[in-house]
Image 1 (cartoon, rainbow, N blue to C red):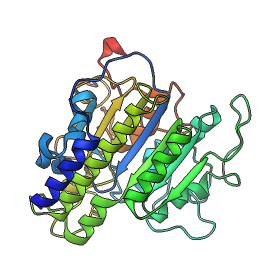
Image 2: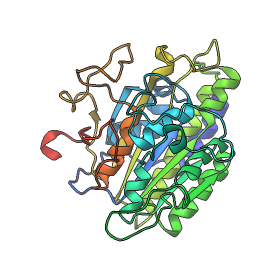
Image 3: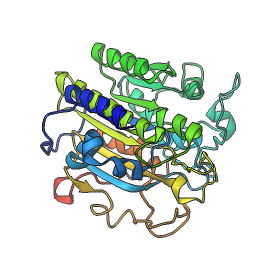
Image 4: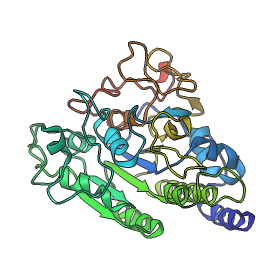
Length: 355
């Protein structure tokens, strides 16, 4: 394990910045937003690695806004239902839910709207209809459900100004091999940055299912998390060396679920290790060194050890479902039609005087 981490540290010398200086605070909203999902990432894994072995995760913390006590959906702690929460700003079940409960590769003709029996708008709809380029790059083939749901045949007509068409997702790419996926993603960014894009990374989840969510120094899972840190560093270096994206890009990173060592699973939605996830926000329009619950005392409530239901009258916890409308807020765009999570776009990522 130590040799593997030392190897990664050598890579950090290439890809990680030389200093951890706070990013400049600015009132300018982002021109580009990247949503990163590290599948199966537990926040205590990042804490276990610490700044020495996870310098890029800690750069997001030190230079941005963060929490290590965010929540998944209340009813589901599996991949596709939670990613659909992220993209639609809805919970899974109930009258206002997105209704996508499946977690396997969709069959021919399956799409989110058919389960709901009504069109379910996404963050891609809003960004695309306002003229921004959109992209989804995934390391699991089942993410094709979003391409099927938001293509030229399934997307909703654009009624926002100039008609940008029904295909809400301009580019969709899948590759099981993370390193190849990252190269494809950065090559695409180099050609023309996406206004809104999502990057899905499978490695922590794959390691967790194979070996358990083991938070120890010899753990394959911890090695996978350190690899995610290396990828974050590589992406940060790319952003800061790209003249189009530098100082104009915001990055939001979260997870779809955690997982357990003993069972090598994460399906029980009432278990803390399954529903507790990190959430980091960094870059243009974001404050520095801020804990998200501390700067959102009136709209979000620190949940302690539980995962509250959606129907509580009191403030909700920060959830991965917040990120779709947060991304749109950072882009200066309105919230997703029909969304209920962060629909008012009131999750602050700066101190009040800087909002």
